[in-house]
Image (tube, rainbow, N blue to C red):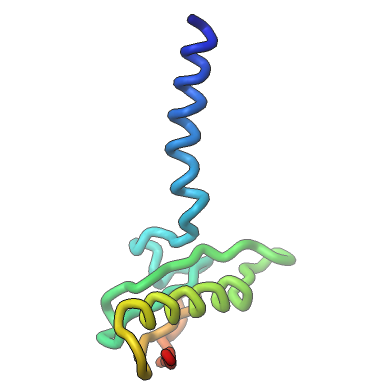
Length: 105
């Protein structure tokens, strides 16, 4: 009986942890906060994606995590909106939102 209980606990923990590990997107409530990079739709208010940034040399590595976020946003925009140029806004931490575009072939 002990083995069955242990297996059930392991299976439950794995089922909960796997989706979290597979999806690196942070919750939209963290958009515009220090330690995160954020992407917004062209209306500048709808959150497309948020990425938590790891620490590197006692500072957030905005360069690397921003690169991954912008690639993911481009892939999503191309998949959902098709060919052409699609505008979105990108924000580092609590800084200014900057206009970006994704060109889809």
